Length: 495
Image (cartoon, rainbow, N blue to C red; front, side, top):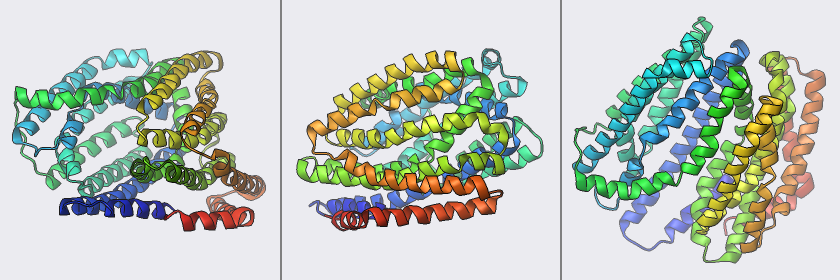
């Protein structure tokens, strides 16, 4: 089904009348799609198994919480190292000059170096604020230095992306994460504790820089040329400011609540979120395909409405069974495979799961609105979600502890109804028709899987067998409930 959506995008590009360069871009885009999809699947699978299953089984909850706190700190400050110069190089119509490269590299490294030095110097104060021990403080410092090393990859990465040459980037990222996960597991089992994260992060950063410059050996020079800087910043700064709300909403709140709930609470929250958001990886792949297709169809509201309805149906067809299935096996997964110490995080998972259920709808529709050029509408929605997050999350955390994070997400998710209302004002959307069948069939599958897990599953092998059975139940339910609709949608999706 995803393949059919992709084929539609290819056909749209084939219809473009233009120079051979367009055909070349299309071919590169095809390769980029498969490269990025493969990367997403491989990296997500490695990270999920390592953090959420293997390490969750043996490490204290607090250790994973400290790592996530340290990562959140670096991620937040990393925002201020980017003034949109990378995006400026990618979108620049003219050929990139050596002056552009030199100016971008120099400005970027100046900002990164200043921020990394500040974090390293004030790491003891940061550790005291979040009540981290000595190894936690050094983890913050190591992540800051790794952030500096990673910034060295910006220019060669941009040059590859500009040419839609994603294969080297995918190769490097898979190698980085393979080294990180293997080293992390080995060092953890060797009783390195939190230092395992520090060493693994450093190995990943060093290998990544070396490999990327091997694939893209771009000569780097130091210097700032005023004309080049002005031209790049004219696009870069507005581009970067556009993501400010997302930063405030998604990155700053974890830093605030981490102080309130501590490392253990942070460990429970990030673990349950990781399990819940795994299913959304499917949606992100589909959105990459549908956004250009929606953009091309925006002149024809009738055709766009049909495409949007089918896109939502296909998305829920894949995401909902993954989400419901995880909910069905989670208690058994925790007790029989991972470790009962994660029991307190299970309620958070179900709160985040409801939020994810709504997020599938709201994200698909905001993607649609963006494709139609209704940026102001989606901006208003983002403002609303940011305010709700900042108001509800700290209050509920102060009342209910770390469970308050999931509770806030649960409550805010129902505001997705506004997205449906706004989208239906523009297009003839049948949201209920699109989500009803996947919801019903996913529920049937979840009930069957949960019941079997409760009575019969006591090992990895039996759990895998039940997951396979759940997949068969879901597919069988789909064809019993809506065989004609599914076949008709798949047949008509091409047109």
